[in-house]
Amino acid sequence: MRLAIAADHAGVSLKQIVLEAACAWGHDAIDLGGNDPTVPDDYPDRALALGRAVASGEFERGVLICGSGVGASVAANKIKGVRAGLCHDTYSAHQGVEHDNMNVLCLGSRVIGPALTLELVQAFLGAKFTGEERHLRRLAKVQQIESTRGAE
Image 1 (cartoon, one colour):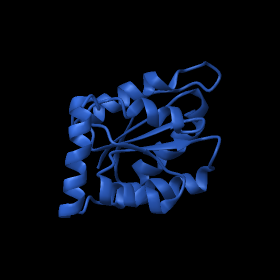
Image 2: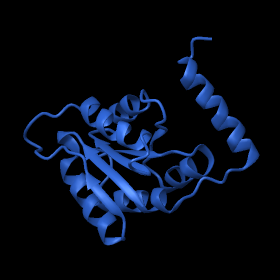
Image 3: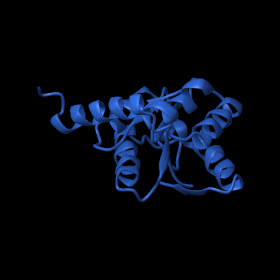
């Protein structure tokens, strides 16, 4: 799988662990930045770069890391075509893909450690969208909200 990975300054260390593991698992994992934990790096900038790369189809999925994961998730979900979820448990990491066709996993580096992070990334990358009618119906509704930006 072609995977984009990015982090703000708070997530640089965890990003490196994810990048190395994803490559070891056989994925084509690309680092989209956030490289110095001592230099402030705003999560919206990383979310925009990663989100555009995933939404364009250049990457199948993305992993985005900030301190709590919340800001990364909020920012990434502003990009049309991105379905980002903040997950700190394995059920959500795979179910978000299976039911909601989640394409960006957001993680909080100040919330979880390396071992759980790798479990979550494996669950996320191993999951497939079911394509069941009820999930397709719900996804279409989400896409309708996205296309109108909730203005109705």
